[in-house]
Image 1 (tube, helix red, strand yellow):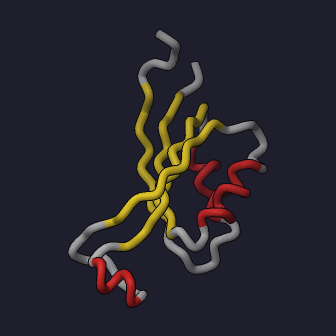
Image 2: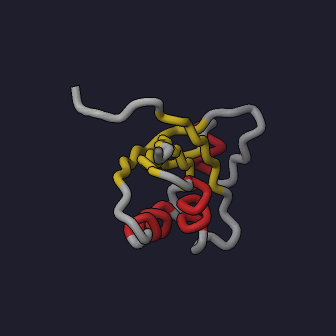
Amino acid sequence: MTSHYLLQLIVDEKVVHEVIDQLLTYKTPLKFNVEAINAYHSSQRLSSTSEQVSGHVKRTKIEVQVEGDYRAVIEHAKAPLSFSEMEYLALPVTEVGIA
């Protein structure tokens, strides 16, 4: 039985297109959604002037449906990133279907 996961990737908006391109070239087709988010946290590094004024960092959340090895998807997605951090959360999915 294949394990299913919902993988949430949080990436800097400056590199989101590179990550999306990587996901599109994965060895098996992946289903994913992309959503712009505003990240708030007391330890957040506010690097640009607009981030310092607004008090939050612009990030992009990519939710990927993964069958099998989600770690391979993470490694493939972060391949073009030389210095940017990519946060992730892997959630096991107990059931998949259409109701």
